[in-house]
Length: 424
Length: 106
Image (cartoon, rainbow over all chains, first blue to last red; front, top):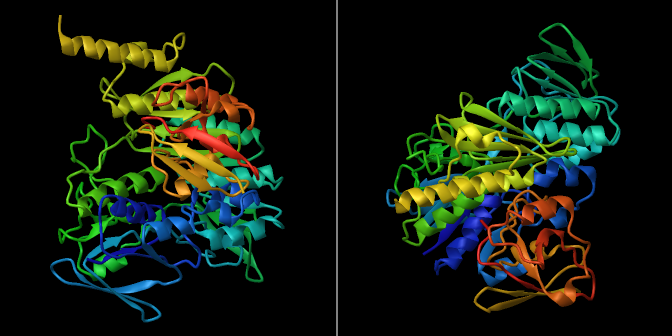
């Protein structure tokens, strides 16, 4: 039985190792498009961009790991065609004409940066960040840039802006929504983050859209905004989200809707092909979601946990993808950690930190705690992540009481739950 | 070349030849040592690389930092005096390091 994994990012690598650990005995082939062995992407906007972490230090696994697990790692091959039979077997063909026959197929093809649909987006000096090549290009530009404009106030944009500012380059972040990290965190948290970035010298401009990038001799020179302002820039970084790379799945006739639609066992619409990571659109894994909604996530946690569950599916085990999604973003001196998924209309209970710069926003849906947004508060983050995983809520009325650490609040809530279960 | 001895809760041991400059966490994850997750890649964001450091290695590494201290207090397996986040244990040439992996990381 041949297992073919298309895409050698965090999800593909995890699935390859987990499938072997769970008893897949046949050949496992992991095909990646990039020339490098699989690496961690999060440092690309931070340590790698600063030149503090060489590519070798980003390796996800050692050469010995692939050898020990008998994983055939193929790099530099772009699969551009898949012939898929009704029973999930088939053949994949690369742009160079290499072919791989498979009995089971895993699509872990990731996402690609969304492009800016405005005039001037193709000018020299307009970059996005997804892979090592992008990061190398960006690092090269940062070495000589005199004014950076980041379009998009999401995680990647803010991380890049913080890196530029730390290097002493004037940086401006332009976000179309009224607040940074729109819809991902509460406005209370977004405001704290914006204030910290401004204090570090970054210009943060929200509620404004770029309408045109103006160039001189083919190179970007300025960003024109919809309020008529013009921001000079010799480097523009576009961080306006990503789109799933689902074209192989579409061509193979698998159902796609903002990514490859899969069930909680990571099976696509043919009931055989597996799709995982950024390219997949599974049911919301949150313990309280009851598969009622779908959610395409782009995070390390999602890639690893969904891949681990999918490996179990391949082994014939029933271990649906469940868990509390979590995210982190290191932005200069800000450590932002998020446990759980809040909706924009979930209510906020604030817990000001004990030390300056600390902040935790608890998010409630009715009386249930569903998420926490933690700035420089790793203990709060861990306490809530565990509580959510164990199904422990916290009374809203006492959650804001900072006399007691969150960990103690949650321990008390757990004791109360246990008492209730045992009865009088 | 540094060498790390990872002991699992059931007593099983993995011995890995590491690279100087790598952390005990990176060495484990790259080589498939079970029980050390390290999802955040060493940015002190996830606390899934908790280990118990052998007494003889206690002074071989930089002391516990503020964030690490705060996170160890909330680790999935109860903290002990020799608890460390292994992403903070950076290896040097010639070292032999012994760690024990806890029962749970998440």
